[in-house]
Length: 175
Image: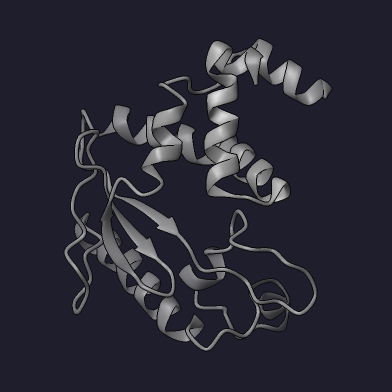
């Protein structure tokens, strides 16, 4: 962590350990934020200075009987493409009864975006443009809604260090 955030390393770890008391969960969240979520936020901030950007956070958690996938990377894809009843999808996402409703919401949003450039679908909350101040983000999950700066405490603790430097990647991959 020191190679990535320097003197703030312990503060970063403390924040995640407080939010995720199980060490494994904290480690997964640190890695997920570092590799996926925070670079996506940086990209949205940069692109948002030139064009409208819409962010979403997928919070559905798999209840697969095969393995605890949680809300793994790419978990949303079967919902976007409407394949939540395929056997290989069920092995990944599980059989949560909300999966059909959630798939409909996601497909509606993606179709609205393809048609109009705005993902706000009919019968859905207004999905506002993302910016670095309000950070309006659509949360897709058990309670789909627009939220401001989701997981903001995690985002803020990094202090703007994103993406990691080449040296930091080498240190992370070596350990």
